[in-house]
Length: 220
Ligand SMILES: [Zn+2]
Image (cartoon, rainbow, N blue to C red; front, side, top):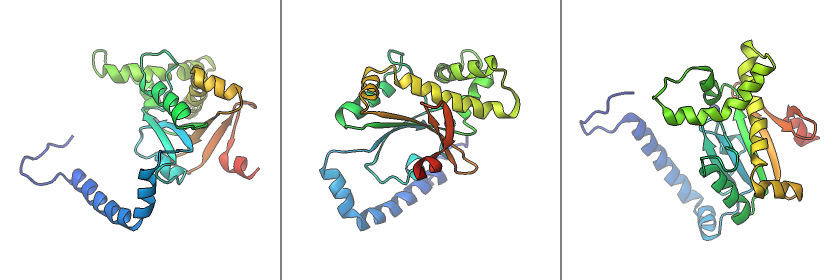
């Protein structure tokens, strides 16, 4: 962390954000009719996106979604705590998206090299970072599966990341509103894994229990 200067000079990180905002204002003026239409109507997003906080994995960039199209939950390691767990923020957003916004597709998107998954492989000193420690414990089932399957070495992290996405799809099904929606064929749940190096997205096919390329899925 850099020392915050008290000289009155604008911190360069904030300066970047302010300059970005200035460019956004110009774009807003150009597309004013679009933004005003958005503001005048109730939001009607197409997808509930549950993704990681990672600054390199941008939902609207990956999907090329416009404002108004994605209802997003982002947290460390794209976790869906099981219904009734101590965290209400994810469950609240799920219920709101499905019941009030009429969203009928949920994407849980993880990514290669996820630090939130990696975190459990490194000891967190007891008494420090208690919130982080409790949160990343949500990735425990995927880690335990890797240990049980004796998956080690270089491929372990990304295999854990993929397994974690599958567990989050299972956790989605612990919410009544999701389980009912899926059973009635009204709600679709999708596991995506974004490869930060190649830009590829692979998707999990819950019926076949296998991963495949998103592009092939779209084409076929
Ligand atoms: Zn991540």
